[in-house]
Every structure is written in structure tokens, then in C-alpha cells.
Amino acid sequence: MGRSRYKIYEPTHPHFITCTIIHWLPIFTRKESVQIIIDCMKFLQEKDNLKVYAYVILENHLHMLVSSDDLHKTMQSFKQYTAKQILEMLKKENVKTILEQMMFYKKANHKEKTYQVWEEGYQPKLIQDDKTMIQKINYIHNNPVKRGYVDEAKHWRYSSARDYEDMEGLVKIERFW
Image 1 (cartoon, rainbow, N blue to C red):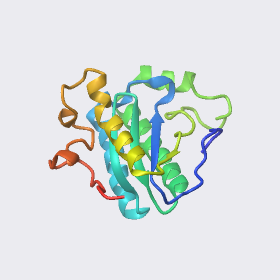
Image 2 (image 1 turned 60 degrees about the horizontal axis):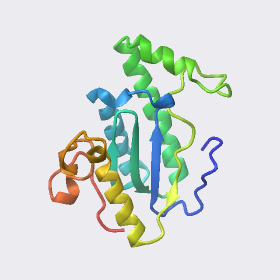
Image 3 (image 1 turned 135 degrees about the vertical axis):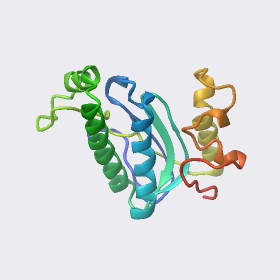
């Protein structure tokens, strides 16, 4: 989990998670990079019993409401795998500027790595009641609306808002907690 002040004390309970790309670089403007996130979420649903209650992927960060059998382990797997895949994609597509920035903004304590994709930690916040769960779901879904990207939450393709409108989304969503 890095040097985060946030801790997971209830590893099987739903948590609100935020993952941010290093220095807020706009990585998720490419559908290929978003697909890496989607594919990893689907894989972890099978492998780690990841339950996704809500999510949104924006250009440089994502929010999720999730739980698993061991959320810390699941998030570690998620960030490691997606970082590796994103770097491979950027190298393959020869995106030198972003790669140079990921090298420049890399934290000093990451001596064994050339690049850093994600900011350290993921700020897990335990969801303790239905009111908080609903508030966080609404926050997640309205994030692209607040930013002016879409007029209605269900129009943002990389979000679970569609699932809550009885439309098919990109990732299987758990609607009961």
C-alpha cells in the first residue's frame, strides 16, 4: 500500500478507492489504456472475487467502490498489472513524452524502477452504511458530469452509471451490498 496514511481494517468490506496516475498525467485518453483497466477488473472479479459496486475512469484517475476476499492484495495486483501493461502500451506506441514524464516524476524511493505509473496508495475509505454507499455511488457517477464531459452520467462510457440505468455496462456490477 506504500506510505499511505489510509489503511484497510476490514479487508472484505466495500471500500471507496481512488487510483491516480503519477502527476495526474492523462493516460486514459486512449481507449487501449482504459481497456487495460477494464480487462484487469474483469480478471480480478474471477481470480480474487473482486466485487465492483461502482466505478468511473477519467483521463488521469479512477474511482471504484469495491470489495474482495483481501482488498489490499487485490489492489496490489491491480496496480502492478495495470502499470506493467500501460508501460508496455506506451512503449509500443512510442509515447516518449509521457514515458519521460513518468521517469521524471518517479518517487526517489522507487530505485529499482525506471518509471512510475500510479501515485502511491489508493486512499481506501471503508463504507459503513447504506447512506454512505449511495452517496459514493452518486459521487462516482456524477464525476464526469461535474467536469462537463457529459450532460448525463449514463452517457460516460467508462462508468457503471449505465448499469444503474438498466443498460449494459463494460464490467459486471454488484448492485447489492
